[in-house]
Image 1 (spheres, rainbow, N blue to C red):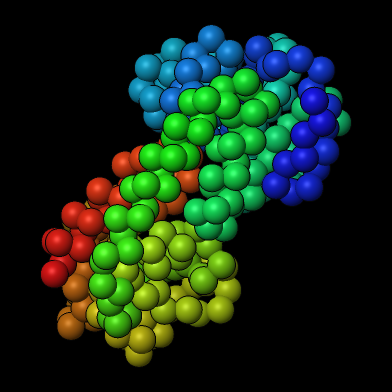
Image 2 (tube, rainbow, N blue to C red):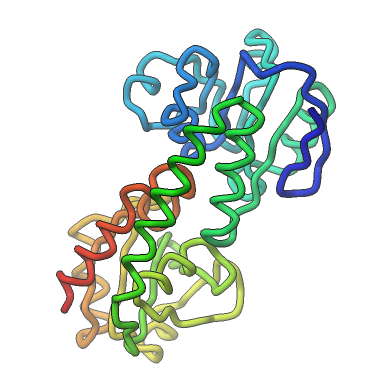
Length: 260
């Protein structure tokens, strides 16, 4: 089977993969929901879902710091990677030895394409199609949500403060769930406190990942922008592009109800 991934890398699969390593947390969860318990032999230390895999599967390092010796020992016949979450140099090094499928996700359509392809190459087509159908059906429910004219800033990091750009999966999820994010040009732009005060958004969303914002962080943002409504949001719902999407729509609807 000849496979072309989302970065246009082509590789050959002679047989259905039986020893899979995932370097991407959201796609690890997808592999679990596709029923590939026996086939997945390695994950990263950030692949926290499902918990049973996090506690039992071999860990091959982090998403940007893979352990090549551990990977070699596991003898994978397929590695799942992502252009943004993994480093280019590590992906290219692994491509020299193993079949590597690399996703590149900017929107919901990219996610569904990745799920479909993952199903094909792992021979879990039927389950993949079921997941895709359910996700599509759920996201149709968001069409009834009124799109807000309010300005939103979604923060993913502090020291420095970082938010998201318009060409990101997170922005696509915000748009689909009725929010208008302030476009600052770059993919993940830094924002100074002075700039934040000038922007004075109606809503400030503090994500649970990659930086784990907590309740204590709300006070600082409220001091900077007293008129903004500051909320902690579940980053997995906005940024995980695998089968976590099966849970996202309900979360988005509940979030809208919360701030209405």
